[in-house]
Amino acid sequence: MKEDVTVLKRIGLTLYESEAYVALTSLISATAAEIAEKSGIPRSKIYDVLKGLVEKNFIEVEDGRPQIYHVKSPMEVLNREKERIDGEIDDAISRLTNIYENGMSQVQAPIWRIYGVEKIISQELEIIKRAKTSVNMRIGFLFEGEGEALIKAFKNRPSLNVNILASPTCYVNDEEVNIIRLFKDANINIQKADIPFVKVMISDSKEMMHTYTKFSEDKRNVIPQTAIGIWNKYEDVAKNYDERFMNQLKKIKNKEKKKL
Image 1 (tube, rainbow, N blue to C red):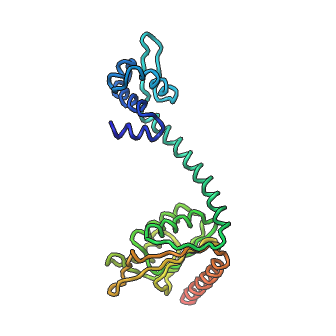
Image 2 (image 1 turned 180 degrees about the vertical axis):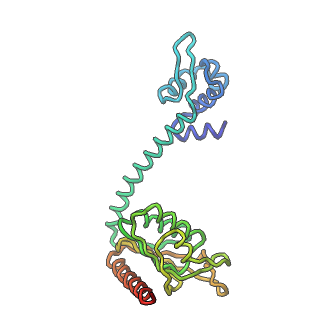
Image 3 (image 1 turned 60 degrees about the vertical axis):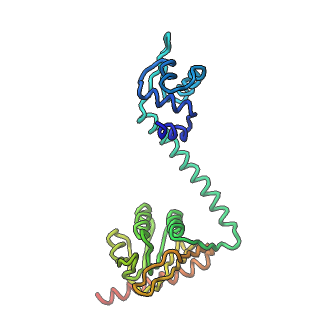
């Protein structure tokens, strides 16, 4: 019961409204006095509490002497509230993202250092979400779970032109990860290339992120606590790197054609 009351409070009900609704879900239909007794809400408060639940469309009231209160299905009311909250969150994301991106464009020196694997991957996913037309990547290594996260993000943006140049394999937690196979199996365009132990993501030739990390001497395992990302929004720099990327991609494709 406490968990349910907590959830109901989070979606906008008061403590007493939450307790009354939870009580009425087991009673189904009841008088105010019965709901007060079941929930422990003072009788002096119960009518105002039930009035609030009626106004919020969580319960219905049947006129009579005494009035009878009928609970609405939790599936109905909670799904309705979930859709409302999701919609409000989506609207807030759109508004705040516009404010954020406008603010970012005003920053005079748009270069940031990002520490930690989780934050680096999160920033990569944000770059993919913001991308308008293209994302190009040079992958010399992957962090644990990063490949799967990138694949999911790319699949959510099917209209993006995605190109990846990558080392064949890397090691994560002493296990060999076949980078090429991982992305090819997900039908994402990837080409094998001689990539050093660095990772670069370029979006729309406008922003980019370099990621560096140290490696163990034995199996060249990633040491995640040493990871650092350099997020760069200098368009001239991003454009220059993107041109170099496309030239390298073109050369690799031409070599493959000659082999055929």
